[in-house]
Image (cartoon, rainbow, N blue to C red; front, side, top):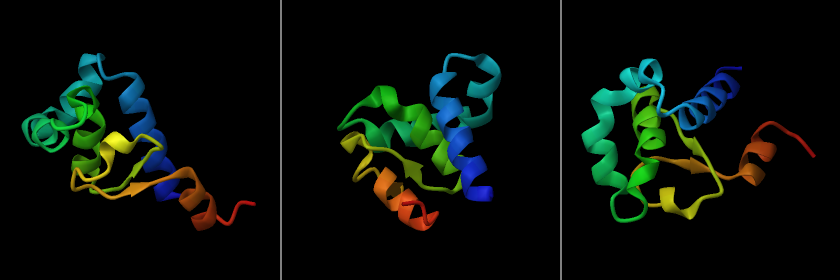
Length: 85
């Protein structure tokens, strides 16, 4: 259940990154997140920041997150973890 809530929250944070209330939650990680993702796509920094804040992996099919120092899960791995056929 915690994994599902975390993954849903990360998805919400990405969609609502311009919302100042959401942004305030992870803005303390902005500098580190931007440094980690700068070589790929700096616009993805809010997702990296939220993952750092929550100390959790990122569920993505976007290769930009690979190598940023945060674990990533692709959909096929999440499906295996949740035992979904």
